[in-house]
Length: 226
Image (cartoon, rainbow, N blue to C red):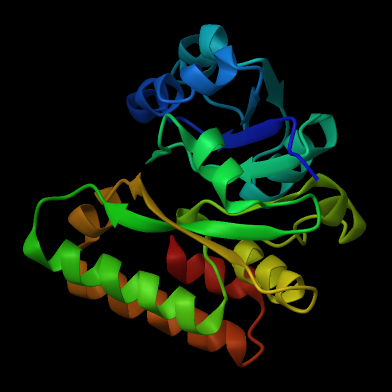
């Protein structure tokens, strides 16, 4: 089936530093009829004001990435929903890139990732991240997950958990079909690695995913994440 429309859903909370650059890259696709929805979790730094002229709708709800993305999905009209982090840059021709894959309303997938920082370790980290996802099919939100709107609604969207909502959802999606991998990378901010240290951030990410796989409650894991 020919995809007629994409809906890009951007959850945000105090992202004034990044949101303008993120949304600017989506304007070419908007001009072609695709929609961009910002879902704000209560920003106080002017995020919504910056975004207002670059999105089709600004929605508000209680903070929490899963809740915000679900809220945006409920108002979306696109055949394919694309969940984009506020500090991640999607290629300006993303719609044509996805069209070439033949993605349908019954499919889902993700983009390879590139980190914004210039440190040589980021090149190693992004390669390992892409390899891990390619092998396991378990995708984190940094990779910009996309899925057919009807599939997303049939699965009742993201689970109402404060962490690992992306891992939980893609685990269910994998039971339906394997993902489509887009080799054209999105560029995600490396700010967390730069702020907390590369080694510490990598080890923490591994530890949290391992604990989640063992059955730890995401409500307990989120305390360690932040």
